[in-house]
Image (cartoon, rainbow, N blue to C red; front, top):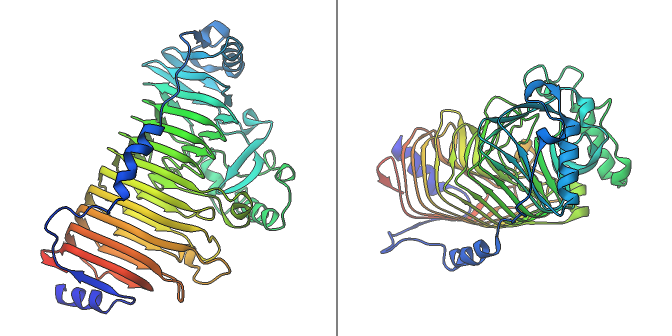
Amino acid sequence: MQHSRRTFLGAALGGLVIAPALAGPAEAGTAWSRVPAIRRRIRPPRFPARTFPITRYGATADGVTPCTEAFRRAVEACAAAGGGRVLVPAGTYLTGAIHLADDVELHLEAGATIRFSRDPADYLPVVATRYEGVELMNYSPFIYAHGRTNVAITGSGVIDGQADATHWWDWSNDPPPSEGPDKRLLAQLAEDGVPVAERVFGEGHYLRPNLIQLYRCRNVLIEGVTVKDSPMWNIHPVLCRNVTIRGVTVDSPRGPNNDGCDPESCVDVLIENCTFDTGDDCVALKAGKNADGRRVNEPCLNVLVTGCVMRDGNGGVTVGSETTGGVRWVFAWDCEMSSPHLERAIRVKTNPERGGYVRDVHVKDVEVGQAADAVVEVALDYENKHTGPYFPDVGGIEITRLRAGTAPRAFTLIGNPGNPIRGVKVSNSVFENMTEADVVTDVTGFELRNVRVNGHRV
């Protein structure tokens, strides 16, 4: 098997380079020198020392009495006073949508649980949001802010979306009611250039909202909390600047499309010391989709992912599939990834309908215990689409000091015919128990330096 694998690699299309071992660590040239400046720019917001307990505004901690109005009044009072902390004391609070304001920190004490209603009517009226990379008017995300400065969600409590197979997740199924017809309708509206204000969904439609979405906000902090069982993506900053997500646990491995954290078209993002156990990608960097992504045309730039643990998920650190606005300067290091249900560790996914670019993705010092598919996947045929009018430009991917234990393949690299992946470099890395041949097609500049697979240098 090893002989056939090495022959396969040597015959892979587009210029595999087998290079000698390096004398020193294979850092990504000057790319990593950008990290300190990015990190200095990312500063969590600070808030006035004023506290507004939701119990002062009528909240009851019995998990049954609706507290939506109490949350609204507490946020309004906090904002009117010039900002501070909206405090959620220990106990369980049932609520509909929570909308944050400028200079408001939503803080959950130890033992506090915000439990979100399963009634879609509690997330109306519709708000401006994004669904899988396309803007529209839809059900409110459960915790939402739009155009705000200095917003935070902190503490050691639990944010529970209460989604399950009969609430919210059932909308992802094929039998009606389901999201399929609405997804196709939204895509067509975007292709036709219908204004966002006229793309009205919500009641009578089945596009699932996110658990936490902060939209066009500046100075964002999410720290310490546990989030679980979202209708779909758990944490979704969109078009934000200066975002810190630190010490968060995402416990949502059963839900469809339950991504952990998806910064989309954001600039300067730190995701640090988080744990992800998800029903889809753990961290996924996005930049809008197709016609609507070209209309908005905002990239995702300067993202740092460090000290994180990834368990279940379709990918550990992922870029895509919504890449239309472009993704660049991504740095991931000191992460641990392992699960029988973690399909890939490092993943880039896009297709010729998305367009855009993925450049300058740098990964180092990652431990992958077990993966269910390829350790590293770069695929330009996502959703089995090989041709189209908008070929993505993908390359400049560098990985060093990655150690993988068990997986079917080290690499799945699939470009488009006539539009190859341009540059994947892996150095000083070990893949210990790979059981199948790699898949490498339509790739130029695939370079391995001091890489061992199953005990053999390749």
